[in-house]
Amino acid sequence: MKDQVGVVLSNREVSRDLFLLRLRVPYQMRESRPGQFVMLKVGTSHDPLLRRPFSLFKVREREVEILYKVVGKATSMMRDLRDGDTVSLMGPLGNGFQPWGEGETPLLVAGGIGLAGLGLLEEMLPEEGFLVAGFRTRDEAPLELIRKRNSIITSEDGSLGIKGTVIDGIEMLLREVGKTKFSLFACGSRGMLKAVSLFARSHSTNCQLLLESYMACGVGACQGCVILTHSGYKRVCRDGPVFSSDQIVW
Image (tube, rainbow, N blue to C red; front, side):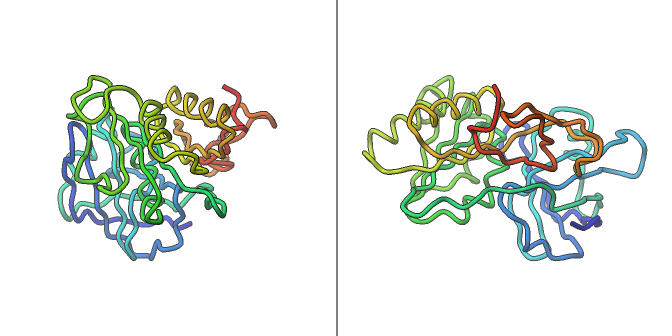
């Protein structure tokens, strides 16, 4: 883990309110694992005071990409970043995804901005791997960032791909490919993750979830991001952010 200054190389909108920030960093980040994150601070003022957690979408030697959605003050400030501006980032942090088992076909499940947490894992997918990505509407889908091979897209309003949720996409995929043994890897809203977890349980399928949470420190010191698991309370930043779905108490 290193605390370093990132220089903005590009910062562009890829769908409605969704931006891709590319940074040059002084230290190599090749050791970053899929599912890990960084704590990022914009500017040098005390407002906003705290850093914000962001998944590592892509890593290239001394470049990192962060896919983020504009939802509040910090991300609005990020939207205004221009080439040459600097940010402070600390990472990589957290425990990432565990590899899929032998004989298992990996299936990535992304809900909206949850795509940000699966970018590194998507690069590791074998030819037979799949992605199901769900959005509310076509305007929210960063189509240029979604792999073209073995991908299913859903939208709640039916404006893109299959009308419905990611569960509808998964069920369609299962009907098409038959009895393939899948291993699920999901990132998205808590409601979506619960639905994917229950689906995996009903199909006796291995499933790992990347949880999102408000974080103050990112290293487990403040205890501000705890969740309830079947083995007690766990810190999303330190014990996660990736958990086996059967650990979580919904």
